[in-house]
Image (cartoon, rainbow, N blue to C red):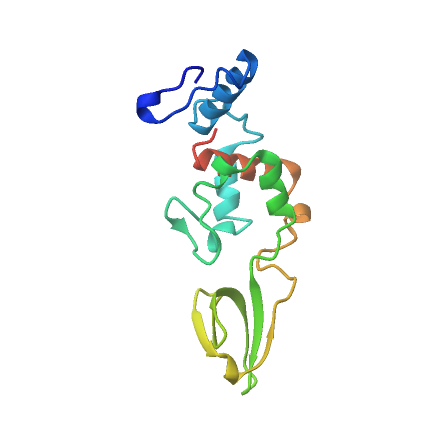
Amino acid sequence: MRDGIPAAGMPGFGSKLRDKQLAEVLQYLRVLQGKGKTAALPGDPARGREIFFGSARCGGCHMIAGQGGFIGADLSAYGANHDEAEIRKAIVKPGNQGTVSVATREGRRYFGLVRNEDNFSLQIQTADGKFHFFDKQDLARIEHPAQPLMPETYGSQLSKSELDDLISYLMKASGSA
């Protein structure tokens, strides 16, 4: 890093960064490569897996390593890109993931995730996994409620140790711990 590799197009940084700064940049690059410190698991990943696919029913919507639902995000690598605090917050205070509520002119109502939308059409996926395609001119109402599709009760439904176990499972499943 100090001298660079001119033949490969990498400039040297020795004249711009002090030794300590070069060491910090190198340490950060090693972390990005997966060669840095490993995260300590807050709980038991095996129990977390049972919670994910069992009592919390996360696996009904989310997938890990090809197992589970598909309406929610695939969480196979989620723990590799988020730390423990971020994962905990996402579980106990989920944000709106692009939910939509529509009513047709015939009075049918649908609630789900927006999968595609343009000026003329709307495609949503409901919690049962079905896709619904609408011409906007055939809809009486389109609303984007603040209500997330993911339950907002995990903070009170799961104990601290169950949350720790679930977080540990997400971290371990991604190979980040």
